[in-house]
Image (cartoon, rainbow, N blue to C red):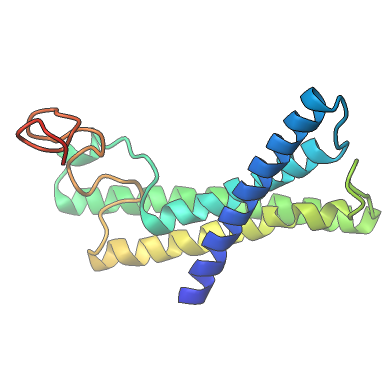
Length: 183
Protein backbone atom coordinates (compact mmCIF):
# COMPACT_ATOMS: atom_id res chain seq x y z
CA UNK A 1 0.00 0.00 0.00
CA UNK A 2 2.93 2.32 0.73
CA UNK A 3 4.14 2.03 -2.86
CA UNK A 4 0.66 2.73 -4.19
CA UNK A 5 0.49 5.92 -2.07
CA UNK A 6 3.91 6.99 -3.40
CA UNK A 7 2.76 6.33 -6.96
CA UNK A 8 -0.40 8.37 -6.36
CA UNK A 9 1.57 11.29 -4.89
CA UNK A 10 4.26 11.02 -7.56
CA UNK A 11 1.66 11.19 -10.34
CA UNK A 12 0.07 14.25 -8.76
CA UNK A 13 3.47 15.94 -8.57
CA UNK A 14 4.25 14.94 -12.16
CA UNK A 15 1.02 16.41 -13.50
CA UNK A 16 1.54 19.61 -11.51
CA UNK A 17 5.03 19.94 -13.00
CA UNK A 18 3.73 19.24 -16.51
CA UNK A 19 1.07 21.93 -16.11
CA UNK A 20 3.54 24.47 -14.77
CA UNK A 21 6.23 23.81 -17.38
CA UNK A 22 3.74 23.74 -20.26
CA UNK A 23 2.13 27.01 -19.20
CA UNK A 24 5.47 28.74 -18.64
CA UNK A 25 6.84 27.46 -21.94
CA UNK A 26 3.74 28.55 -23.80
CA UNK A 27 3.90 32.06 -22.32
CA UNK A 28 7.58 32.41 -23.24
CA UNK A 29 7.04 31.07 -26.75
CA UNK A 30 4.02 33.28 -27.34
CA UNK A 31 5.27 36.59 -25.92
CA UNK A 32 8.99 36.33 -26.65
CA UNK A 33 9.11 34.32 -29.89
CA UNK A 34 5.62 35.05 -31.23
CA UNK A 35 4.90 31.35 -31.68
CA UNK A 36 3.66 28.50 -29.50
CA UNK A 37 2.83 24.85 -29.19
CA UNK A 38 -0.58 24.04 -30.60
CA UNK A 39 -1.06 21.10 -28.19
CA UNK A 40 0.01 22.92 -25.03
CA UNK A 41 -3.46 23.95 -23.85
CA UNK A 42 -4.87 20.47 -24.38
CA UNK A 43 -1.94 18.85 -22.55
CA UNK A 44 -2.38 21.28 -19.66
CA UNK A 45 -6.13 20.61 -19.52
CA UNK A 46 -5.70 16.83 -19.43
CA UNK A 47 -2.94 17.16 -16.82
CA UNK A 48 -5.22 19.29 -14.67
CA UNK A 49 -7.96 16.67 -14.95
CA UNK A 50 -5.59 13.92 -13.85
CA UNK A 51 -4.34 16.08 -10.96
CA UNK A 52 -7.86 16.88 -9.73
CA UNK A 53 -9.12 13.30 -9.98
CA UNK A 54 -6.09 11.91 -8.16
CA UNK A 55 -6.27 14.76 -5.65
CA UNK A 56 -9.89 13.98 -4.69
CA UNK A 57 -8.97 10.58 -3.34
CA UNK A 58 -5.75 11.88 -1.84
CA UNK A 59 -7.76 14.46 0.11
CA UNK A 60 -9.88 11.66 1.58
CA UNK A 61 -6.77 9.61 2.41
CA UNK A 62 -5.00 12.49 4.14
CA UNK A 63 -8.18 13.94 5.70
CA UNK A 64 -7.53 17.36 4.17
CA UNK A 65 -10.86 18.16 2.51
CA UNK A 66 -12.63 21.17 3.95
CA UNK A 67 -15.43 20.41 6.35
CA UNK A 68 -18.41 22.50 7.38
CA UNK A 69 -18.72 21.20 10.89
CA UNK A 70 -20.96 23.71 12.68
CA UNK A 71 -23.81 21.21 13.03
CA UNK A 72 -21.67 18.09 13.44
CA UNK A 73 -19.66 19.61 16.32
CA UNK A 74 -22.88 20.16 18.26
CA UNK A 75 -23.87 16.48 17.99
CA UNK A 76 -23.06 13.73 20.45
CA UNK A 77 -20.29 11.37 19.35
CA UNK A 78 -22.72 8.58 18.42
CA UNK A 79 -24.91 10.85 16.30
CA UNK A 80 -21.81 12.45 14.76
CA UNK A 81 -20.60 8.98 13.74
CA UNK A 82 -23.97 8.30 12.09
CA UNK A 83 -23.75 11.67 10.29
CA UNK A 84 -20.22 10.86 9.13
CA UNK A 85 -21.32 7.47 7.82
CA UNK A 86 -24.23 9.14 6.01
CA UNK A 87 -21.74 11.53 4.40
CA UNK A 88 -19.60 8.56 3.36
CA UNK A 89 -22.65 6.78 1.94
CA UNK A 90 -23.70 9.83 -0.09
CA UNK A 91 -20.13 10.31 -1.29
CA UNK A 92 -19.92 6.63 -2.30
CA UNK A 93 -23.19 7.02 -4.20
CA UNK A 94 -21.74 10.04 -6.03
CA UNK A 95 -18.48 8.21 -6.78
CA UNK A 96 -20.44 5.21 -8.02
CA UNK A 97 -22.63 7.27 -10.35
CA UNK A 98 -19.69 9.22 -11.71
CA UNK A 99 -17.56 6.10 -12.01
CA UNK A 100 -20.26 4.26 -13.93
CA UNK A 101 -20.95 7.22 -16.22
CA UNK A 102 -17.29 7.83 -16.90
CA UNK A 103 -16.69 4.14 -17.56
CA UNK A 104 -19.49 4.17 -20.13
CA UNK A 105 -18.05 7.35 -21.66
CA UNK A 106 -14.51 5.96 -21.94
CA UNK A 107 -15.83 2.65 -23.27
CA UNK A 108 -17.73 4.52 -25.99
CA UNK A 109 -14.62 6.53 -26.87
CA UNK A 110 -12.71 3.27 -27.27
CA UNK A 111 -15.38 1.99 -29.64
CA UNK A 112 -15.31 5.17 -31.70
CA UNK A 113 -11.51 5.40 -31.79
CA UNK A 114 -11.44 9.19 -31.53
CA UNK A 115 -8.11 10.95 -31.23
CA UNK A 116 -7.57 13.98 -29.05
CA UNK A 117 -7.80 17.31 -30.87
CA UNK A 118 -4.15 18.33 -30.83
CA UNK A 119 -2.37 15.40 -29.20
CA UNK A 120 -1.88 12.32 -31.42
CA UNK A 121 -3.21 9.89 -28.80
CA UNK A 122 -6.53 8.10 -28.47
CA UNK A 123 -8.89 10.29 -26.46
CA UNK A 124 -9.93 7.37 -24.24
CA UNK A 125 -6.34 6.96 -23.10
CA UNK A 126 -6.21 10.57 -21.90
CA UNK A 127 -9.59 10.22 -20.17
CA UNK A 128 -9.12 6.79 -18.57
CA UNK A 129 -8.44 8.69 -15.34
CA UNK A 130 -12.17 9.42 -15.08
CA UNK A 131 -13.32 5.91 -14.12
CA UNK A 132 -9.97 5.19 -12.42
CA UNK A 133 -10.16 8.39 -10.36
CA UNK A 134 -13.72 7.75 -9.22
CA UNK A 135 -12.84 4.12 -8.47
CA UNK A 136 -9.93 5.31 -6.35
CA UNK A 137 -12.23 7.83 -4.65
CA UNK A 138 -14.63 5.00 -3.80
CA UNK A 139 -11.77 2.93 -2.41
CA UNK A 140 -10.60 5.83 -0.21
CA UNK A 141 -14.16 6.45 0.97
CA UNK A 142 -14.46 2.81 2.04
CA UNK A 143 -11.16 3.15 3.91
CA UNK A 144 -12.50 6.28 5.61
CA UNK A 145 -15.73 4.45 6.56
CA UNK A 146 -13.72 1.68 8.20
CA UNK A 147 -11.68 4.26 10.13
CA UNK A 148 -14.85 6.05 11.26
CA UNK A 149 -16.37 2.78 12.45
CA UNK A 150 -13.15 1.92 14.31
CA UNK A 151 -13.12 5.35 15.95
CA UNK A 152 -9.74 6.39 14.49
CA UNK A 153 -11.35 9.07 12.35
CA UNK A 154 -14.11 11.55 13.13
CA UNK A 155 -15.38 12.56 9.68
CA UNK A 156 -14.47 12.95 6.01
CA UNK A 157 -13.19 16.51 6.27
CA UNK A 158 -10.39 18.21 8.17
CA UNK A 159 -11.93 19.02 11.54
CA UNK A 160 -10.26 16.87 14.14
CA UNK A 161 -7.83 19.31 15.68
CA UNK A 162 -10.31 21.97 16.77
CA UNK A 163 -7.82 24.61 15.60
CA UNK A 164 -7.56 26.37 12.31
CA UNK A 165 -4.29 26.04 10.41
CA UNK A 166 -4.22 29.83 10.04
CA UNK A 167 -4.87 31.01 13.58
CA UNK A 168 -4.04 29.82 17.04
CA UNK A 169 -7.34 28.90 18.70
CA UNK A 170 -6.41 30.72 21.94
CA UNK A 171 -5.99 34.28 20.71
CA UNK A 172 -6.39 34.41 16.94
CA UNK A 173 -2.68 35.17 16.44
CA UNK A 174 -1.63 33.99 12.98
CA UNK A 175 1.96 33.40 14.12
CA UNK A 176 0.99 30.32 16.13
CA UNK A 177 2.91 31.56 19.21
CA UNK A 178 1.06 32.82 22.26
CA UNK A 179 3.74 35.52 22.74
CA UNK A 180 3.02 36.99 19.31
CA UNK A 181 6.39 36.03 17.87
CA UNK A 182 7.23 33.60 15.12
CA UNK A 183 6.59 29.98 16.02
